[in-house]
Length: 374
Image: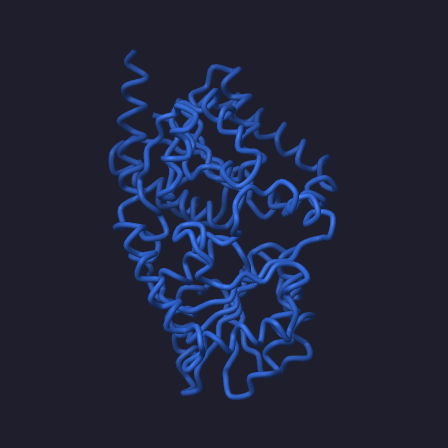
């Protein structure tokens, strides 16, 4: 059978790659074409377009790039039609993929969605659009099944693929050697994987480092962004190190972390590293978001445990002095470290066991075969 996958971000590339491997376990003749990244390509997909050309963050940033987004969508639709897959598999990336789902429905193309758009966060009635345009939705957060039940939409909770990624992680030996070459305790800086995140948030993280002379700081960088971006930001911080594409190895070596809001907050918690969640965007994007967001937290950690377990510093609260205060509280001997670590135990129990990729791949192959024999 033929599968066409679309992932628009780094995390989607990782989960898409694991999903491709799982699909091939149950459909040995599977042919996969994809918009994604190197990991999906390594898993055997024919890569059509890289996610680095797709990722725009925030309302204002999306508005500024509408022309590019429309061209990308037109190109994607043309390629899907040219290859006419048995199923279109959408992975997160809501703004683009929800439109692709609606378009594919009109073309008579089956649609599976893996890792639901965060419709529970804002404009919740988008759940009705998913129900109308998606043949099967596979969700990865415990509370999502209950949320969609409100709309009489039965979805399948498969567990979280981050547990698979962590279980299957192979250490980068060069990174491990670098990270372990000093006895000084290490604090990880994870500023995100998008240029806009890094330029907005990493400078505050770096200013914070000056208040902790007894700690080592290491920035987790990503190779899909140019070294020159980091060079400019780190120019006045000679003692701050960096390690590329090794976030799990960095977190395994870390005592605590400053983390940009996103999937990395959940990864950090699952690796048992106390953290401060950081977020800043353009003033317009923030002004719009603050009026439409329907949930009380921005981090997946707090949403899953349903309480403010990890501190979230958002927009004007993200200052070097405030960040330093919150970081001090989660370092050894800090007032909140034990509380955060205890909360992580609850989080891990709620998340369940690894195997999401395998369960999803098996379910997709089985469901698609049933559909094709009707």
